[in-house]
Image (cartoon, rainbow, N blue to C red; front, side, top):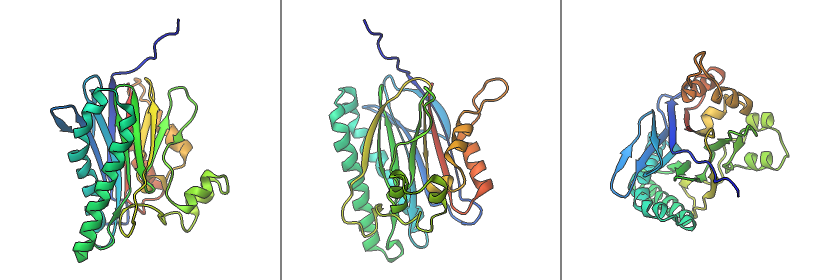
Length: 278
């Protein structure tokens, strides 16, 4: 007889965001939510909670546009999650895994419509766009959706290395995924930040990338904006995510990621959201 899979009931999260050394305003936004069929709770920069009776959603968004349009775009993206996703908790409770993709596609479509409407209605919002990388934790699965060049990483407890789950919606991202360039060349490519897909703007259709991971105790997930990646290679992220103090206590990995990224680059806003399965 096979042993039942081991699942953890507790998540621990850490978040940090900084405007960087050059920009005056922060166009990044992040979100943590805990919700069930009755209540929705906004989560702070760090904390822990059980997935036994609640779902958890974590997201990062990078806004783009003139004046303050980029800042508004990312805020609108995360605010829409707060109003739309908790309504679907019953699907998680009933184990309707096949419905998650439909829910997330609808969510991204609603955000896209809201940004497009504002961009067309107000001159100061013209061209506003946003990336959005989202993870949704149920008792046994992490579902994710993504559009743009923010990222979702997965560091399994098995030690198989850091995996980028999300695909950068850029031509440079395609070149990297298909082995035409390496990580160093991708980081210095002049068109690395030219998006092919985003929410809002002049994009007619929304087609987010969807996926799922059956997580286990010891797994770590990282959501971040492209500004964080500009200053860190993947092996540096792995080193920081695995740091412990002398007493064995977990150091705040989000703070360390942002601090180290700003030391080495800092030209863009940088945001990190780390979720550890206890």
